[in-house]
Length: 253
Image (cartoon, rainbow, N blue to C red; front, side, top):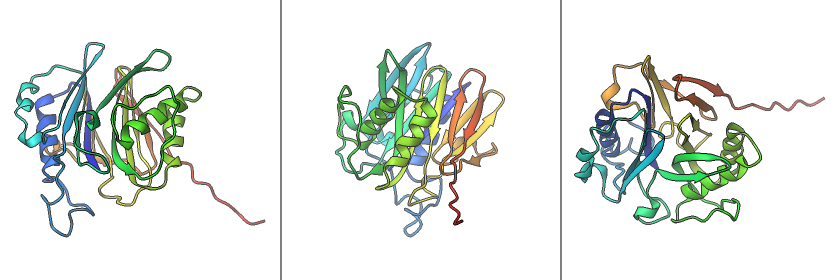
């Protein structure tokens, strides 16, 4: 159970970090997990990380400190990049540790060079190819390997959808999977629709994705991503397309 955000295009890193801090402090929205005790009662202080592109190279910075108590944040405010992903963690099922902190980065010659983060908690065994060896203990890292295992035979959108829909013992499952060229936002049905409601906003210079509307970009028109949708973002053209979940209707003849 976490918060995550992404910016593609003309990325204002400092404003992204401020938005992530407010999300981590639970100051931005009301949802099922804070509605009884109010904002500030469901904080995400179990580590944080940022992955960003420096040219064609992924740079990943992580910390086990809460983002709102970490002086390292100020060292990252002036990053120049056209793609950044930030994740703030609320641990579920695994300890606070550097190896359990998102985003995860993996480079496979046959598939690509990926940054990945996940919001949700899967309460069942996740299957993936034995060639992958998790460094940490999270369901999130294993979910990444399950998606990449599918991608050895299928296209990314199909791989993400099949993987997310396979594991039903979960609170929710939203993912960001990004390469230099393309970013994928994956969602599915979940127990807490408001908490797991991914949003998108766009300007002529930028696409923003967030677990909540980003506090420093409230003036933009934010739209909810329907649960079950998968977005494919062209990071260069700043365009995206939506793959809708197919509803199957059974009729009795």
